[in-house]
Length: 551
Image 1 (cartoon, one colour):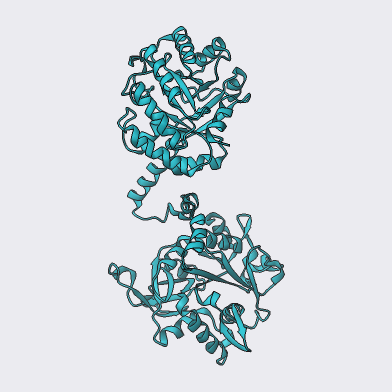
Image 2 (spheres, helix red, strand yellow; image 1 turned 135 degrees about the vertical axis):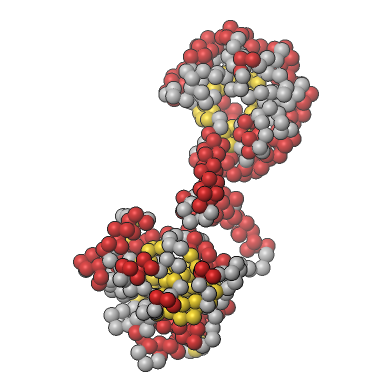
């Protein structure tokens, strides 16, 4: 169905309908996804997002450009707040033709003088347009339209200008006779008395649209019982975005980092989704050679976690609940939030309890006698294929980066994002606030690096020197957070070196820090990314209490 036809159905619907304000393609798509059957392209909001006043400071061609993006981004009809029609009858004719070309379903024009002033700015001092001249503008617009379902809504500003009910009715009737498809009756009062009085006297001669910005406390049922056609929420997406942006900007200026806001704002992936990135990805598969880096994650979660006592009597630590969800579920959510969907979990103790959906499962049945490296080997082995009786790395894993993490570490998704941004072949993340772990006396993998954070030169890469749980305090530069990222080009080599290491004496009992130390000893550079907090290693019941606050 055409957008114009759909809008006309909304206008003449026997039930009360609702339009939501939008001011660009993104907000229009958000309004449609929320469920609104139509959109109000607000003049106030469009001018505000352009940084100018609602006084026709944005030209009508600039407004048209915004509308084109809004129309392209949505499938629901759009009603333009067309101010006064941007000039006389001739401007109105051209406006209607251009709106139809861009798929705009309707336009609302108000009976004030060009250039207009917002109705809530010195309203009673604003002069109204000559009624006959305005009727001519409506007739010109109707004559110019080529789509019979295109609608022109006449906005009556008599109440705003202080002229009263009689003048409002007189003008509305003249506009009806001129060919208007509906009447928008506007009021600046904090109560709906004026619009209700108008509707009672007006009856059903034409559909009546209202904008309850000022009389917002009125129950919607009052509008429904009065028989109004459409209610417009006229500027609320802009105002809510404004409040959020002001708060975020102030926080950024005050704190000079992103740590306190990153998890309170929409992820970049949500921006991509609203932009239609998935459709572009599908198109690229059709029209472009295959490209793009993929990531495979391995979560080591085979251990019981005896330090949690009875809590892990019937399930492994990774499935202990924090904030109503298993620890592993929070980990998977963080990976998914960073766009990583291919996740392999190594399970062992009470493996049948690790049953979250959309995960690859690898079992380490020897979890009690083996260390983390054996679990990692099993995971990487599972990603191999056999060819002519000879093991080789499959194309699917060879092209993917690898991230390894633990099943008892909660973290903010930005940690994954900085890992993915690294151009190094091997990368780990190190928390410079290592003293907290040492003061609490819990096990930690401490690191010595080529440069401490305090002496770090801007842009200078930092490399791992060694990692151990018993480093002297004067040699500790941070605590390893349990994340290792291997570039796709090095995954095959990494797998081979891991195989050799676990085959050595006691190799099946080795831990991740043993592997990292071996890489460094063999001359491999392991890049260190310093950060501060925003993760939790759950080693005790006390940690679980803190974790509930963390999530």
